Length: 159
Image (cartoon, rainbow, N blue to C red; front, side, top):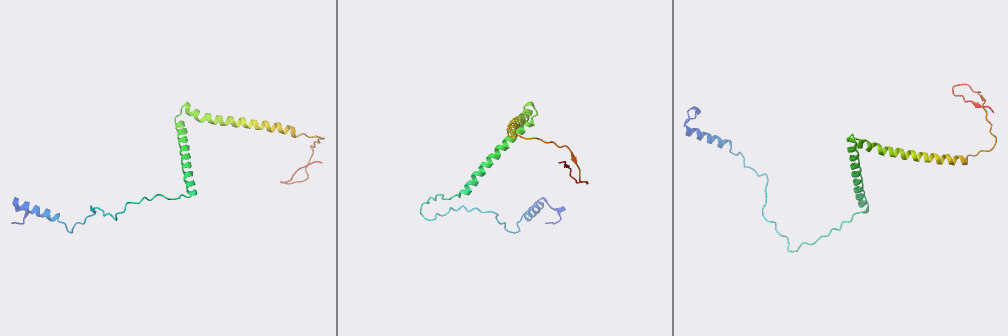
């Protein structure tokens, strides 16, 4: 057998190729498995039947209140979010309905505020007429005497 690769016969070349392949793929160390499944059945412990164990946890009232409040807040926030989505969805479409969706509630609020304000003003006006009745002589003095001089001086009305 010759070792010169240029002068190998076909049988020598295939034997050399098989040797090189076997040497390249030869494991250096034994392969350790990475997982293992035990298929043996589990042993039964004792002959007694299972005993029911009822749930006897007691929830404190404060925890129950917090849980109920959390559910209520969550539902309320979800409702507000859905309402905001509907309003913004209506505003996104620039149509007559979208414009009316914004202006009609604002106009209604403004009309209600105006009506309430005028009613309060009427009540205030009628109540002050009956209570502010002055009797006696009225003296009107228009003379002003300036006795102090300077930047922060004050004027006194004449006596």
